[in-house]
Length: 382
Image (cartoon, rainbow, N blue to C red; front, side, top):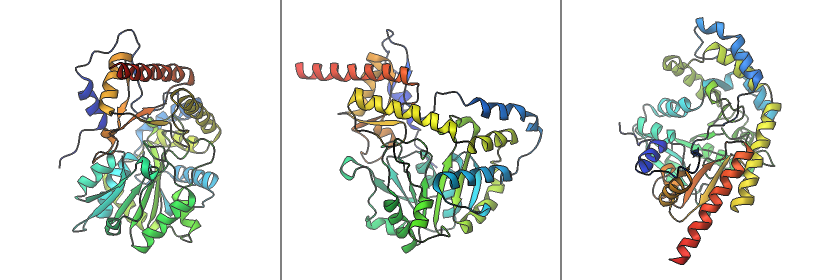
């Protein structure tokens, strides 16, 4: 199997021969990793239960984690799930990689569709599954929303959506998600929405695909699945706590498969994550911080207002040139959009992760604005 280098590896290669301006402190806005401390009450739960490291965890996860996650789904989306309709997982990256392999195994010519640009694990899963890929291109022309009318989609065995979207920040409404559910049922396609940014929003709460399934009269969640994670909402990517929820028939077989994967979550992490999933107050504080950062980006860079995620999908003339020169002149790293897409998608954009505190974010954004202004002036003079 041949896998593409990860975007951050490509970035390292791109910048390796560039000496950044030493007058500026190094800043990296490349990775979607919160730079805030994990709340104390979560850390304390982990510390108090570290003695349980001498126990093997169940591959299915402890019941208290399942219950905490189902309570989150109920409190946030008003969707009631049975215990058989949710599996606790070791984050969501491992699910996104191994679930397609489970689902598509045995299909002679599997077809997998996913949004483009994308989280690269989708592509890795397609390669590992020997799947032919259909890209759902997200562009300014389609408001960064996928075209449900693509003829090739009818051949898909699995469609992965990602809304709220990384990196374009677009959001699908309840009705739009409902159309995807109806499409999946009509053509007997498994539909999965990666909802890891569902709790990072400004204004209206983004809808879940589970809500949409109920909305269009599919209460059993047939062919419908979602994944979610604690990483962004709780500033706790190291807890590796996520879940996959929806169609219990699919999840029943996948649960058996997972007993062979060996992705059990250490018990101290499960206890800490259950505490985190059960609390919404700390999430509101985190959300407010990101909302402030996004407002700063709108005010300083003049970018469109963002509804969700903590990214800015900044349109530029050439993403590689912009990235190299910004690093050279300001010692600021951003991620070229083409590293997140295929077939030319993303070449006019860079992704900026606003994961620092607002004071630092404001300073950085002003430096980027200064760089853009100076670049435009130099171009005009030329």
